[in-house]
Image (cartoon, rainbow, N blue to C red):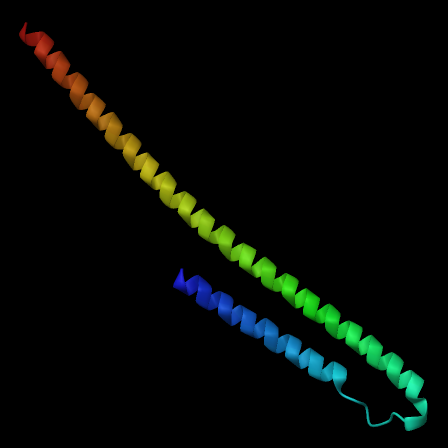
Length: 111
């Protein structure tokens, strides 16, 4: 469980670092823009802001998917443990039945 949470933390850190770098790149101003081009700069700023919001939304979705994936893996592990326990119990029940019936047959032979 600790290993899964550690790998999930590492993955989340990598995703966040990637988003941070993309956001930094998106908000960098180019050296060629002019002050007289205010409307164009605002449009670019809005577009970059929307792009940043989209990247953030995708990162949140990726984080949720990662969390779901880890939960499903944990559930699979628990299912396997439960199946092994049930198989062991079934084997023990069968053994006890054989011993019980074997004891009854031996008692019947004595009569």
